[in-house]
Image 1 (spheres, helix red, strand yellow):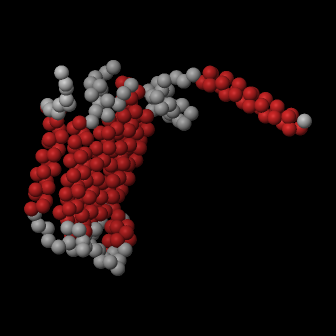
Image 2 (tube, each protein chain N blue to C red):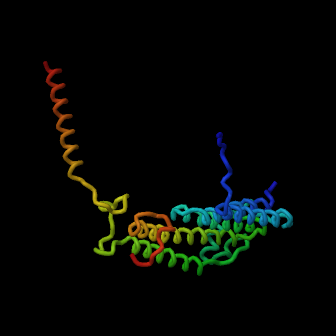
Image 3 (cartoon, each protein chain N blue to C red):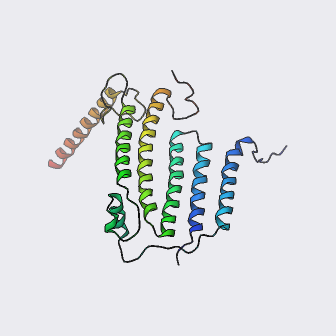
Length: 101
Length: 142
């Protein structure tokens, strides 16, 4: 009846690898933030899957905290992105190569 | 001489191969391991209520085993507050300490816009529209 935990892990691994691919290949900072979100949510899937596997709620509660941490990270990331665009006129991370301008 | 499309091979495909190899390794490990039967949760108790109890260290009121997370809740509250302050600090302009509000927010990154031309255009359009409407009314009256 219940889905075996291996398939949750497989889904989570696929999401993590898609996020990793995005981080390695994308140059737009917005897509980079989205890729980090994918990787964090892959970790969340693992937490919730093993919470069901062991009948213990700790994983589900912890995934809430991971989500809150992701929100904080995105708030700072978008702030940095604003400054990046203001100073370089672009959100391409490969163009921001100088500390002073 | 006829040309045909070629597969663009090269070192730029390396990140994709890395990600794919990682997925292959992970999938091989997951599918060959055994985790046993899932314990699951009882169906007659509210999981949401138990999560709420766990968040404020009242897990003895619930029935599903869990840890207390009151300290983590307070720490994450401070972290979110710090992130909000950091985002506001980053979004401020360096010259004037004024926070960028709705009026001065520009989607093109702060380049000045020419509002004079737009105002003149809209005024002339409304004048024409009112003239037309007056004309129509006059015709109907006649």
